[in-house]
Image 1 (cartoon, rainbow, N blue to C red):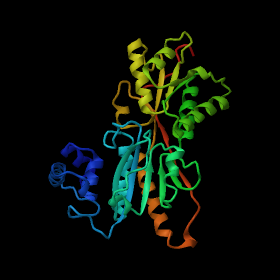
Image 2: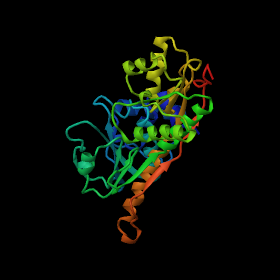
Image 3: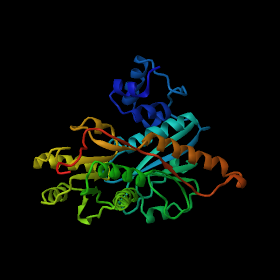
Image 4: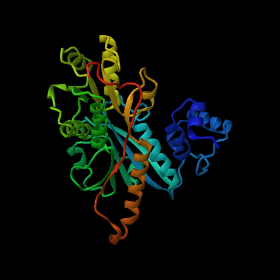
Length: 340
């Protein structure tokens, strides 16, 4: 049987758009629906739960909300390589559980990051809060008991969360570089002080500590071509760099090309997230694989269970944090340092 990815390729859309077309057709415009349905027919694709596309969803379905906090105003779920895959997993799990999932986005830096309260959203039985969120935003949801955080911790301890093993992934990646013989390892992090990046930096720091290698704090670089370039132009520049995510690693790769620094001969490089493009760049990027679709599935599953159990006080458990394992995918961007 054909897969959702074959349909996406035929229709020229993302896999998450295909999933939404079958699960929440009211969110998709007629032109896109036509492309997807025709592509599905060509490749003989059958969704897990065959549904007749209609403009009005079945009222009997439980409705959950997937709310994405964007890093930038122009950042959308469709354009975000990481969170679009989290959404694909959430949509697949919702389909398996016969749940309706509605989508919304707001700027995490906005004056008010609370999603708009449309009649449709007010009918949602629970909400997935996806992406980095500050304490002020969390406080705006204090009256909503059915919440699960995705890819971020709830620092208040009041809600469930599903995250990846950020610390363990960065620790393993740094240990891999140390095992190759690198002792001057840089860390490129983002402009925002998000929890996931802080956890990854902690893994990087602890790997140095456990290996008995002194840590040079000046090798912690804020993302941006100028700051990366300044670090790589130093006479004592690092021989390896770990990016807080794949985007940080690609920025580093671009600066290396400008400066004539050859990867991995002159500089070893590791990213984090293992997004689809990492295997296609030259050299192919070693990266920490994060099972994004699994994170989305677990978020929906956890929220669904929370709602189902809320009617029975004996089944209501304490808030928990599910940590999804990650793994290092070795490719072509790492090698022992030239001088040993």
